[in-house]
Structure formats: C-alpha cells, structure tokens
Amino acid sequence: MESNRYLVMGAGQVGFHLAKSLADAGHIVSLIEMDPVRREKVAEELDAQVIQGNGAHAPVLERAGVVDCDLFMAVSSSDEANLVASHVAKNLGARRTVVRVQVAAEAISYRKLYQELFRADLLLSTQLLTTTRVLDLIRGHSTMGVEYLAAGKVQLRKVYLDEDSPLTRKPLKDVELPKDSLVVAFFKGDELIIPGGDDRADPGDEALILGRTEVIAEAEKIVSRSREVMGTVVIGGGGQTAVAVAEALRPFDVLVKIIERDRGRAKELSRMFPHYRVLHGDVTDVALLRSESIPLAEIFVALTGNDESNLMGCLLAQDEGVDQVLALVHRSETQTLWQHLGLEQVFSPRALAYERITDYIHSGFSANIVSLQRGKAQVMERRLFDASPAAGVTLAEIMPPRGLIVAAVARGKKVFVPSGADRLEAGDLVILFVHRDELDTVQLLFPGREH
Image (cartoon, rainbow, N blue to C red; front, side, top):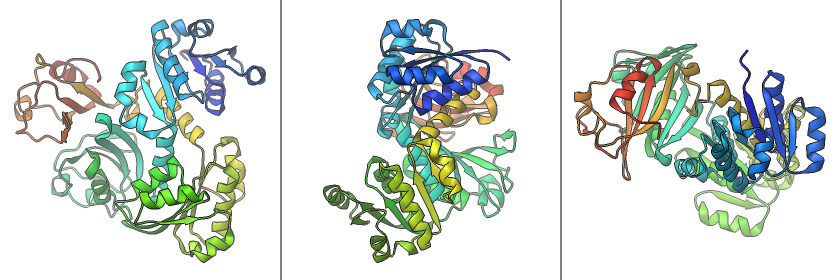
C-alpha cells in the first residue's frame, strides 16, 4: 500500500478521528494542537507526531512536516486560522489543502474567492453539510448528494430513482424537465452511464441532475417523485442552521413550525418567515408540544445549540407520536449511545465533515460532489480564453463526444444550460461533465486548469 504524508491542524473530534484513521491505515500523520493539555492527551492515544502550537504560524507548520505533505487539513474551531493556515501551508510546499469553515454562505457564494485567496483545494462548511443532510432526510432520502457550482448559481444533485420515476418509465428524450436543467449521468451499481435520448434508467439506479439553483428543486421532484406534500415539519431552534433549513423548505407544500426559546430571536424569525408559525418556548416543554399539536406533525427536527435539549426534545416528540424525529448533536461520540435509546436519525456536523474529507481522500483528492465511481467521470469548471478553440463557436460546431457534456454556462450574472445553437464566448465559465475517456478532449477544446 502506498503511504502518504498527512498533516492535520486541530485535534478536535474531526482532526482526531482523521489523524487516527489515516495513521491506522499506515500513512504518515502529524497533528497540530494549540491546547497543551489536549495535545498531551491526544499524543497518548495516537500513533502520530503531535505538535503543540498555532497551525497558522510558519515555524509550527515546518516543524510538523508541511514541506512535503500530500494533504494539509485545517479543521480547527477557528475559521480565520484555518484559512490563513491553508495559504501558509501551500506556500511552504503542501501539495493540497482542505479548509473547514462554519457558515454555509462562505462555502457557496465565496468558495472560489476563498479557494483562490487562501489556496484551498477543498472548502467545506459544517453548516452546509448539516443543512443538506437534514433536507435529505426530511424529503424522503431521495437526494443522495448536492454540489454548488458557479458561486452557488448552479447545483448538481445525485438522486435515487424508484419505479415511479419517469426516468425509469420512458426514454430520457420524452421526460420534460424545467428549462436550464438536465440529466448528465445514470449510476447502475458500479457502472456509470452518460445517457442519450433513447436511454432509460432502471428502478434502484441513481441519476445525476444539473440545473440552475432556481429550478433544480423542481427538476428533482420530477425525476425522483419525491413527496411534494410533507405535512407539518417542526424545527426546534432558531439558529443559522435552523434558518437555512426553514429557508430551503419554502418551495415545498409544507407547514413549518419553529420553536425558539429566546423571545427576541423568536420575533426576528417571525419577521423572516411570515408564512411559518414561530413559537416562543422550549423544545423539551411537553405542555407546549401538546398545545401546538406537535404530536400530529410528520417530522420533528431539533437543531438547537444544546445536545441535551435536541435529544430530549426528540425523545418527547417520538413518545408523543411524531413519526420521524431528527436530532443534531455536536458531540459525535454520543451518537451511537442515543441510537441505542431509539433515536435512529442522530447526526453530528463534525461527523459529516469527517465523512466529506475522507470521501475526498478516497476519491483521489477529487473535490467534486461525489467520487463519481472513483474517477470514472469528473465535474469541472473551466474559464474560456480568447485562444480557446471553443470560444466563439456553437456547441453544434464543436460536436463534443458523448462522454463530454457542456452542462452549464455562467456568463456574468446569467446562467443557462446551452443548446446546440448557443455560441460560447471568451470569458464564459463552463461547467463540464466528463467521462475519463474524454479528459484529453477537454484539454484540447477547453485548455487551462480547473477554475
């Protein structure tokens, strides 16, 4: 087995488990931790070098072996330190860097800016990972993964298909999708297929769909037949993650109730969501739950900042008869314990970050939505230059092979899925879906590096 050199900044839950799993797999691992007590404790448990210090400082990074590391992972609790450390690590010789930040907007709207400024190869947000997981569970497990492209203007989603999906009942050319959306691939077990108009999927397959952010939810509903009427969803908590979930539920036929214990915050939420019912109270107050008919809700999701309140609220809601309960916990080591007590859907932002980073490593350091069958296909963004062969010509004139799809074009503030008659222009940001057999073709038609 080939041994790589990894450097982790931050010995919290994400950093510790990353370091342990990589060291156990036979890789060379170093860990940086500021807290001397935490550093000593971790050093006793890990078969890895543990350095005390600030990972954003060059001397500390050099002592930890950043010069020749294959991947530097900045996963401390400080977004600012993680970003700065990524930039310093790259300048000192790290081949790749991963940066964890908290706020979702930074990983969507400013991802490319941050990646360029701080030289991060993968920027991930624990808030975005959590929101996506919650929505997947609420909406019936149809969406397998989500990626945001073109600064959040385009989304790519991997969707599970059952026997009711039109993609399994008729050829792709006969399935009417919203404008500026398309199906780019089918996954049949280990097989990846780039479909033509006459192809159809089988029940149990997965589809990769791409579209403008404004239409992607409608496209997903069409191809997955995900439940459009979800009844009542109760959100416990009014923090940033809860707001992101509530915002994402707007397009669906759903009654949302939000429970927030801080009166001022509850009033603010009422102004933000005038069509939702915002309750001032505690998620563990049984009298409140009963008086507001919470037991009749289909879904109860606890997203407060307190693990005990989330877990107790879910247990109470479950005991009162709510069909599906979801609990957010920040201490991922307690996840299994609570599942033994009957809470099956317990998830941790740190555990989700750990999963995303390990997926990135196992996929050969591909920052795409999924590993795409371990490199069988890639999704990339390329900027067209004046000298690019594709600049100034139509898609029909380019005649891209079946394994190369020009999936979307971002031109200034405009984003669209191009047709054969559309002419590409210098300055366009093109989003390409590419089978590995056509990677050389991409370099010929769209020379340059990933944007």
